[in-house]
Image (cartoon, rainbow, N blue to C red):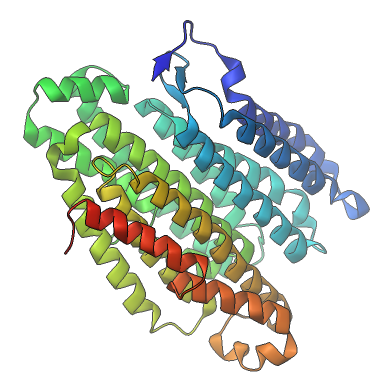
Length: 409
């Protein structure tokens, strides 16, 4: 990966600048947008997200480079993941419009959505430990606001507190782990850390630092045993926000974890492929088994999303030695994005119509609302990997990459 001279290549962060500018511009607008004007922030946010999406798609053809003094990557890997995040954000924006169209909070929701997505985009490109913490903090703070959109909802307030406490602890542990790497190498950049560790370093302290950093990423992508916050938060907040949290931050977490392991721990150092493989096996098994015991649709989808994270982790475990592993992970995450948001979209409709998301409320749903019921059925069948749906092809790609990597077990 080449590096441009200088440290202020603003042209390389065009999509991020669009999102940041749009978010900042909407802050004062949302303050006076009331009544018939309350939809203005949502419309402007939609235009901004689509503009950032178009520019990111154009950047797919750019040659890879590092900018801002080698702390930020501009390459096909980052652009692909950013496209998925922006698509998820736009679909969530439509879900928020349908869910909150008669609620005053619709004016404030797009701002939190934009800044949360901006943090996710930055995390996929960050090559520096300080920037990782910065973008995780931006993602988390904006997500707290999304979870607590309905201020009078006691369940939403409880979910916000749980999310805040768990996220703050996970981020603090991760930041503490990053200080170990700085103490060992004297650098904050992933590539410099990786180059130094290849030449030496105390393996005990490297393992401790890597384990602490992994906790932060594992929390974001809901890997067992750091998943415990997800079901309660998904259940406590509204369905559109649950759908967003189950997809966009998770995609960012996978992108960030790949950056960290491949650059800062090259060559499978400290046995991280085996660690990820074990976590993947435990996560997919636990998520699927516990999902069978749920009687609420959002909690069922929460444990399903935990299992889906386990599936993607098996591709990450062989990413250092199987060329097609990254493509398999990206394809599966793209399928997961549409299928999971489709399921949560139906959950949002069910919440508005019935007032809850219990599985008993789905009885007769196909007769009352045939098209939403068809979307839910297709989404769940695809998430389960039933042929010939896209989820089946995604699981085939993941398993093929895993077998090529020698992880037959």
